[in-house]
Length: 623
Image (cartoon, rainbow, N blue to C red):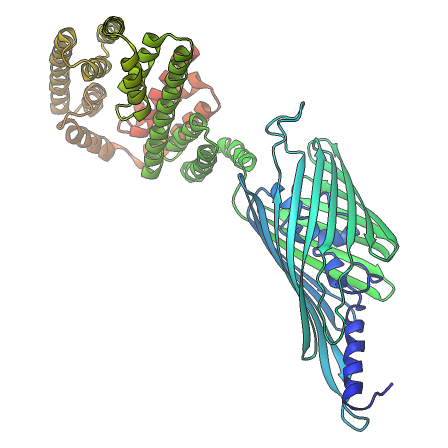
């Protein structure tokens, strides 16, 4: 029908504005009305399962399906979907998302549906010109899973509830005319264990209402209810049964459902059904990448969807799997690669404030890649954090005990605890303030008695520390005895017994180092470099600060390395990594025997010597 004049052109634009929202999308040809393009399935997995993924959505496109699921993402990721439709119509969706431990998950997406090939005339005798219809939306979403530990029976680690919110800005254009609007969606995600889940999405709670010419076209409110249940068969196979009930404002209830069969993380086969017709598809994954495909059968033909998802990083479980696989076949290159996995795992442990686990992982990394200085630096940082945390916990404990004694009226005991806290941290303002406050309350006699008790306690503690240092000395552990005596003197500089003991230890230590150097010099003259190196290493263990030892050790190691054949070097390397493998598996006796073989072949190996010390320490603890 031709409508003449400017007014006719305006009416034609109004008609086209209505036609634009009637263009069928990739998953629901019958969905019509304002904003229908946002009701389409934004990725191939959802399309293959007939849109019923509100409870199991697991990628960046969750911002368009169920924003609450953003809180469950385990890695940063990006995703893109391309759909080729009929009648020169296409649909595209790109999204990115990441999740944080504290603030939940965040995502953003851009959606565009375009259709071209339309013709128009301004007069009956004019040549037709073509134009296109386009609808697009920018969406930003947030999902958060709160701790419900205040509910009986719910642990702090369990997060059975997640909530989500999405804000969208939409734009529709017909030729050169356009209109825009904003809206808000909300969602919930409920889970019971690993198998049962329920997704609820409320679209257009605040509805966009773009206006071309005349009245605005408000997007309808939509409610999606999506239950899902998973069944596991053996270690690799799992089936997800999904369904969805969708209610679009002023339209009939639309049911749909599907089934997904997964084989581990590698592959998935999907089937779906809804009023429009059946759908099917599959997914393939490798590492952090995944490709999904779907085909939807409609009256107008078949539409094909392809989605690509790229994730970044490794989870703790993936790192552990990498480590388990790698331990069975270690070489130098495998060891360096595996050390990186241990480093990443240690970083995760540090972020989770599990410093003991982080230290174990860093020690394993240092054995796998002994020449990596970065590992040693990180180990030092973790040790510093560990000491800081231990000091903080001790101060908190002393503060708690002091306050408890103060509340009970036992001011001398409270003062003693605050004094201990001040000894540990001389800048502790709270301890100093509380001591001054207690001193203002106590009488001179009471303060004197408290100080006497404290001095007696210090004497007992110093006596015990001296006894422990003497035990070290009796067992030939000169370095440990020296460190213990120096620690006592740092606490009590005027303690004569500690000064005399330290002088005796230093004398014995100097004599021991001199004897080892003389032994090494004699062995070097006889070209017995293994014996010379062993004597020097023994001296260094007791006196690591001796300035002469590093040069002497380097010289002896250089002679040994020059005498080492390529075959022996390769054999020593293989034996070393076999020893590391056994150590990481907890087979300390076997590891120790292999280390001894390494040191026979290559006495200059510092990494083997370090592993030997760790094995000996582990054996002592296990006994």
